[in-house]
Image 1: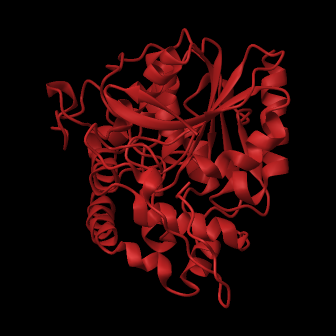
Image 2: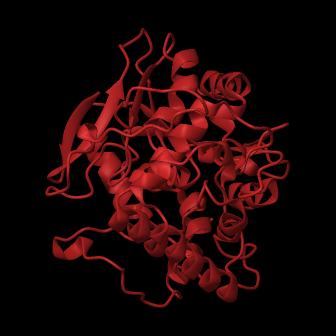
Length: 363
């Protein structure tokens, strides 16, 4: 693991060796997660492409601010029943969008499927239909944070700016961004902000739907309550990691992934976890999402899990339909059978094969 300072905040990242291809695959994880979930795809694709994974600000081992604690020194692990494990570190002409504003999160709490499903209803209504608001018509909404006044912002646009700075600092000039859930939204924003360095975007389990005021209010309230129930001793409760092997997936995943999901849920920085939830689910944020996709200069593809309970394929297809590649047949949407909300962990061979086909198509 290496670290890089982005606007004074240490970020953890890993990068594989260069290959014959000039392209770099940059993987962006989702809410309450970390970079490690991309390892199955990195293992399969790194022989052909250099791969970069990193922890979002306030998640995994990345700090939330310059004064945040060093989480690499925190030792937590959930033992399996009956075993003792030594502690290890947590591992058409459209109104132009302002690049510094946010867009709706296309994901939600991977650890709470019943709650998280509400966030799937984001991104505005059908094009030109009820519930759709243009960027010009959208009301001015104050951010929950102070990015433009030198403070910290947790909007997807702010995270997108973090990513563009990361690409610049690491000298990456030909990137394909692969984002999961909230990470897909962040990848779309980064592509909009830095088109000269981003060649394309692939969103995994990430899409958008319709803003329903009551649903979002309930979701935000429930999300805030959920984030209060994260004591670090939760990791020591026997068998609790089993819950995380079954949440939001088509079939139970390996127990090591359940443990990692538990750790990421508990260890996410409170301000980042709450800020990214609130800053990404305002009405103004949601209604910008389709326009963001429609204005992208680069190709954008969307991979959906057929059994995803959080981001159902119809919501993925809805957001994808605003991109020119969609045409009339959904040419930029791929649906993976027998797959829930963690496609890269549940079906890594299938997802890696689709990524390779997409990259070959744009060689």
